[in-house]
Image (cartoon, rainbow, N blue to C red):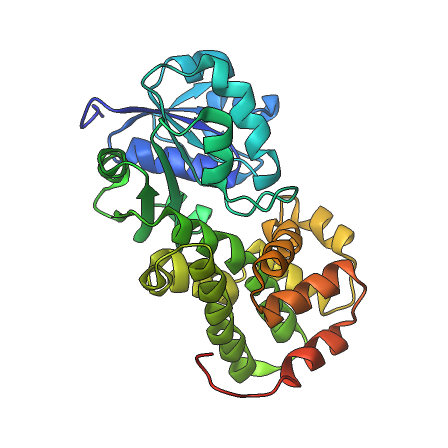
Amino acid sequence: MSSKHTQTIAVIGAGSWGTALAIQLARAGTDACLWGMEPEVIDSLTTDRVNHRFLPGIRVPKNLRISADLEENIGAHRDILLVVPSHVFRLVLQQIKPWLRSDARIAWATKGFELSTGKLAHEVAEEVLGTSIPLAVVSGPTFATEVGNGLPTAMTIAATDEVFADDLSRAFTSKTFKAYTSDDIIGVEVGGAIKNVLAIATGLSDGMGYGANTRVLLITRGLRELSRLGIALGAKESTFMGLSGMGDLVLTCTDNQSRNRRMGLALAKGRSMEDISEEIGQVVEGVKAAKAVHGVAQAMGVKMPICEAVYKLLYEGMSTDDAAESLMSRPSGDEFN
């Protein structure tokens, strides 16, 4: 398959999501090269054309190149897509900075606030790389396995530069994959960060047998919490009614492909957070996000009772019964205040 345009993209991070995004880029006819830090993953992608560890059973297209050399991969491409956990995002940026081309553009599919500072990813990127480099975030209601299998999917790309957003949209778009653009990078990042915390809450609720009514209550009120903090940080309210807001929230809260929802389901059975994380085998972003969101909400003076309950459950020893009670005992009041 030949490239449909001259854009080339280096995908950094060969976990399930990084591999799936690289597959979609190649499927769309974009010249992409995937790098991962685990030698066994790179070996399986090179020899078997399958990421046996993180995305088993899905073959990567022949036109997707695989790289074991991070410096070479960064230097050879103008556009870089980082697909790494939020707690190493700054470290990866610092590592690749010396190798970036002068015309480089940076995108990421990383979700969450930086735990130590409460900064969103674009703030971290600007701090490390400066404000002159085009930046973008890729987010929305997507599961890696479904993207890897080519099932119909849509996501949002928010960028500081309109040309970069349009270029990324074209790079990803195919018959079964649509990439919409936005200029609200704060809103898209906030949606991606907080939905994981809310997915733990809905998983916990379902695991305790509270039923569909409670699940919808948590999703709806959770969207309100998410919007409230996002607006306080400078986001557009309309963003939270789109793919990266309501769409991603509903997906993550209602399907067991979500690692965060599975964390909540298992916590309801009395299992430890450490044991559950080991069984899942990949980063459960909502765990660290709960602590980060708690800190940001406290600093901004924004009330987020659902996220607060998840934080207390994970970090202050609150019982599952007390967490549920703290939510249901709140006064009703005006729905939109």
